[in-house]
Figure 1 (cartoon, rainbow, N blue to C red):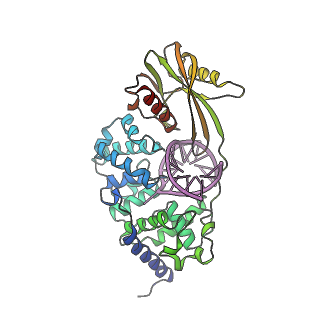
Figure 2 (figure 1 turned 120 degrees about the vertical axis):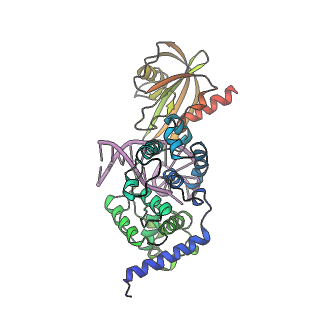
Amino acid sequence: MHQHPAMKLSKRFRNALVEWYSQNKRDLPWRRTRSTYHIWLSEIMLQQTRVETVIPYYTRFLQRFPTIEALAKADLQEVLKMWEGLGYYSRVRNMHKAAKIITEEFSGRFPESFREILDLPGIGRYSAGAISSIALDQARPVLDGNVTRVLSRYFGIETDASTTAGKNEFWKLAEEIVPVENPGTYNQAIMELGALVCLPRNPNCRVCPLSTGCQAKRTDRQHELPVRKRRSASPHFNIGAGLVWKDDKLLITRRNEDGLLGGLWQFPGGKQEKGESILRCVQREIEEELGVKVLVRDHFMTVKHAYTHFRITLQIFNCQWSSGEPECKACTDYRWVDLEEIDDFPFPRANKRVVEKLLAAGG
DNA sequence: AAAGCGGGGTC
DNA sequence: GACCCAGCTTT
């Protein structure tokens, strides 16, 4: 039987990878299951997130929501609490939506058709490919940061991987290489190599099973690949926020469900304007957000925090409620809470630091 | 096609 | 600081 040269090439590529993988793969919780639910969860958590970060979240999440139905029935608030600190919260909002869809439209069984998987909210081309191949043994490719790096180096591809055209080129290549037999093992193998050996900064080519055929290694261009357009510098904002006290109760507000940190809780506040003092900023923002007048007292703490596209310095002040019943003008909900119950609410990382200090001081 | 969306590790 | 990470959705 005649074989196309490219096929032979990719066969050697795959065999070397899979052989290396069988000897070097990490023992990860989601590698001990074929459950579509468990693998789905792991793939969503692993989006733009490191394995070591994910593991404790993964375990806790499954303890609390052992089935898709349990997830579907839970309150979004509690689901967000299990995701607190993991970031990219639309991931779990979408999972929650998808769990409801699966419960209602698929009788609680995770769909097995690629199209139906891809149509679930929060599942794109990568995740659909990963779930289909790993859990369902379907020959679908995956393309993530690891795969892009390995392919660009091995085949010496200089196309900008951050553009749509570049991504399409890599997807096409990934599609051509993914095998019919054990596609899930192959997909995990190439990602594992990217995570453990073919590293962004210091690739460990000495132990790489692909080094003999690697184009980048041959031309000593490992550090130049993959090519990506660099991001512009992120701006900085000063944020003022208040611990608004009324007796022993503290005022917290809930962010809109769409957008940044959607559905999470926070201490009311906002961006400092040009020429405005930080004290005035806190007072103004609280009035604008809730229609509440406060007396701004002493500085409580400062938190510096970096997001993907900007950085903030968050200054927190103790405030005394002065007048006005809160009404949400720039938020979805509000609560007066005491310190015993505050930790039941999901907070973004920067605000969580404030909660931690409050509880440390109170306890 | 580009921008928005977290948080943590690394150099 | 900038870059990267088992990406998806919206505009």
